[in-house]
Image (cartoon, rainbow, N blue to C red; front, side, top):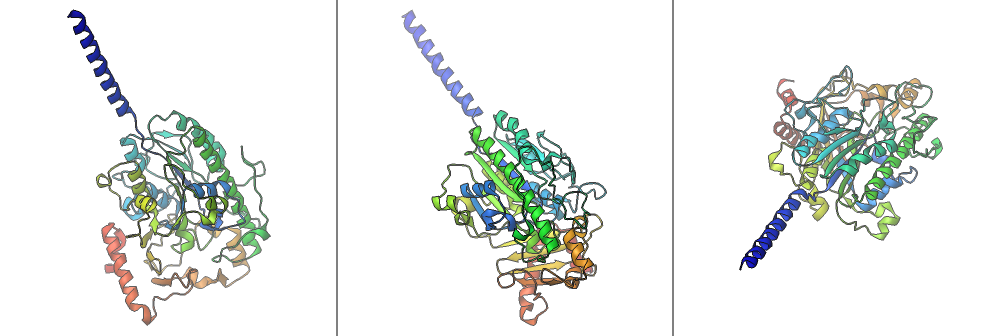
Length: 492
């Protein structure tokens, strides 16, 4: 009898231990996906193989599109570095989060202290977070990461942000040692213009240098081979700079390839949500710091966690990859990431919405318009604009239309612009320079028939009703996002 009791007690103990161990294992196991966000600097969709450019070499970014999907209607909400990055990591428009312009040096803009950003929310919900490369945000307590793998000041040519393979190598230990799911913010300084910006009569180097960078096989392009986007003048000066721009993109592409290989080597690629995007359009006049499509219509490539379902046709031709036509914006990125991380969106203050259902179910309802809000770039560049765009029309409200449109230093000093001005040309990319510098209060464009946005329809009687409808949409947008500039409707 005694032996039976001992046996029963021992069996019960083993059962209880097994239950407790299972419970502990369950508590420790967190199978939520890892998240890697790759943010390029001034990279337009004009120079990616997956978006149709057959000259620029971006095999690793193209491969990511093959494993995931390409968004064809993805938009930044502002075409300026710090404001755009604040939107990406807060899910709030720059006029809502307070990052009205650039963060560095005398510009000194920063988000308001009450903003709760994506890395902070993820950290509070069990993710290990780290950043590497260009930061360009403030204050640090608002955009706080658990680990800083490298510092990245704006326009710092010595920063590791110009050396993307090194960035990947510096990320390796963080990726390997993370038992929790992790969020890696991988922000390159490429293909931003190199500093100093004033290089006339030579083209800007876009960070390219004669000694190269560790692990990089430099890809050099000839000016006669590059593709000049329609919104730029097809001049020799333009081609010289685009060739340098392409070289910086191919360098960044190799860093993307190194980072993805590290994820694969450590068995973490499949269960990782990877996003590739840019903060704003290319650093050429007419793109960056504008709400024309050249400044905000950008690449977005998303590889969702899970088994790759790519077709063979896609593997052979990036143009046949999965693509989405839904209109999404950088306002939606934080909400989407939190959705994948299984964090309740009702508990966070985000102005965007998750497009996870677009990826998983090809959801189409509610993805037919986007809004944009530009306030400043450099502190000297006051020129607030608001925009609403659907697939057919775009309306821009130039709030300070009485002022001459101001130039960012890197655009003003570019070889391309200096060449146009010194030769006394009156047109720039099909647009009259006078119209480019002095803009009316409203600009209305037919995006189907006038994708270059050259013909302003705002003051034609035929479009009076449409203009009124879009203005009302702008006012509603400003009300719902607490835009301080909404008072301009009443007082100016």
